[in-house]
Length: 256
Length: 275
Image 1 (tube, each protein chain N blue to C red):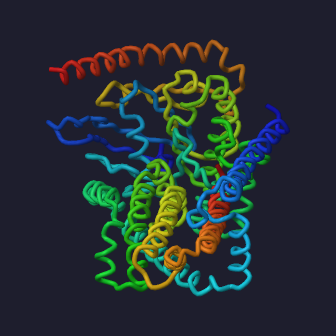
Image 2: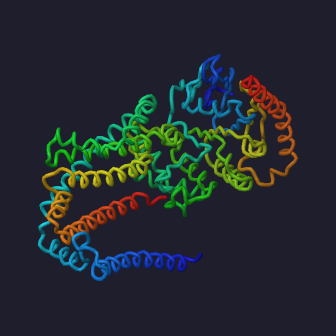
């Protein structure tokens, strides 16, 4: 297929995707305006839009956004730092890899969110329990990816570097790290997503502040239109973050 | 031949993997001695698994032999000697995340070559292998033959006296290896390098080598060394000459028995394992 043909097809599928979302919006509008769906359960999209504009314009999302963003940033940095360091150390030894990799993978498969009550007991209702939970949950994919990344470096490349006189530091900097990087990035991507999910989720369950907390508060006040506006706001923020991460990832992978 | 003419001296080297009685126990090399003359191109040829690659790794300091010793330039070898010995591996071993020119420069970075000198040498060695136009390509964008040229450029840029090549054209098709072989002969006629070249191609060995060391089946040792008296660079016409055919036939006769032996031994080994 020609380049132009590919381009046309890509545009066509984009159009279908956008059309699908618009269709959902129309259905939503029809359901609330004409089909008599209870507005306490599903608010009108037009009033959601007005609320959304108000939320953004008034800026009163700021305190909650600050809380959630801080929790997330701290948790992700802690998970990245501890996960890469622990993962690298485990990957240095075949024995450690054989012992710890299955163990970590096993713990990762446990739904850690179930321990939220425990985290709240230990760290309180404030941001600390969210940070601790987010860190724990995203620590595992980062660590596992780091072990896999450093553990599966092509031996030929290591031998070649050694034969050319690479020091330990040079071997790490010019061979091991670039070889492991794409795999580690994959782990960071998963850690990023599940840290965000678990922090927003735990805010809706037990918290004092944050976007998740505010959404539940609005639901309890039956302020459905504003709650939907907040959900839209959070979804857009997350989409923006994901977009930024994808962009960075694509830049790092330019040689493939 | 005076001692000064010997670039690498291999003294009664034996090598085994694992210990006797273990399942992975293999005697790869047995009591092999060899003098590699400065400036010559020596081919190692033999049945697969005869230990020719093991010998190359031992000479390069990548593997310590179980017994025996290697001297490079009169000094005992204890590990890689990146300033004296460069490698070209069977699997090009280029770093996929670096461009061709970055790959060539990296070896020099490891050895602390100054930046200006790196640029000069990288450019020069890429021109020598005919890859100047592909300096900024990634290895993934090159054909197999071009990748081996890039690996060769990297090895040349290190300006070592000794170059070890482990079946560098083994993964390439017949026509590409023929062209690469001709280019290599031209290239090497211009340098003073001592080269050890492992191959399993009879034609390649005769075409490139000053001497061909024929290995016996495992445990490998040198059965005979054949001299090819033909000046470098070798002309493409050399391949069709009677001299070439005669040497090739001689090698074939020497190798044929060893290959049979190697095959029947590995078949016997399999039966043994089944029992």
